[in-house]
Image (tube, rainbow, N blue to C red; front, side, top):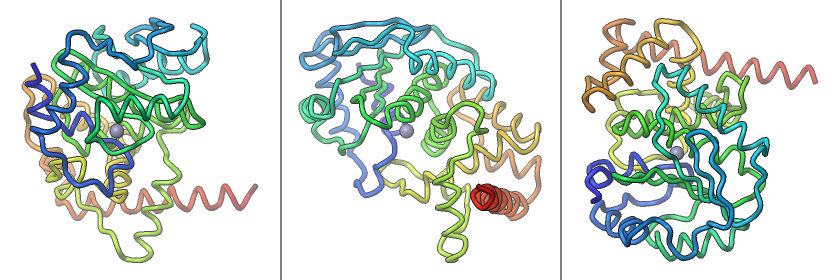
Length: 294
Ligand SMILES: [Zn+2]
């Protein structure tokens, strides 16, 4: 029942705010997730179901009235096209269920009941072999959280085996509003600070070796984002390298790591790592001059 989940549990579950959490044991995770999805249908007590809105691939369940044309829903529908076009992925019809709770206390109660071993976080995405589902409470940062988690859903609907770092890097990239080129001010500032301190060195192979979301720190999230932003927005060749990598993962679930492809097309790791470092520094300088001009 939970084969897909057991095989790749944390790739599907890792999201921000997991930094300080120890790696979850896959068996316990399966047990936990199973408690929410294995007892018949996912329609469990405590899940929002008063209002259901279908929006393209999304099935939105809310325990409050949500106008079908709500701007946020339209934005999530558009996100599907953005993700597909930028990553060169086909569009799937596999439903992605969004469970939206009217407030954080209802969400917390639900999460504690069905996912007791999960760390508390603002929203999360779960993939089983039959369900793609996002859970989130309605709060100030709902738009960003839903873009992040829904991106996981859109990607997993067509590429079930995305490496953890790339899964999060992609979601961090697409959580930004449309038209921002995926530039994430907090990650730019974070990495810039780390570079100045000399306390972080970019290393794609190290990211590729991460096996569980519990190992991912804020540094890893920021770096994962940076690689994706650089791949998608610097040269057509780099965008193509990422697209080809995802296409291969989609086809057979395994492929030589992205770092091997970059080494083939772009030379030694030191060269393209230096290119990313310079790119992040440039984004930081751009942000600094934009705020100075205000
Ligand atoms: Zn995530």
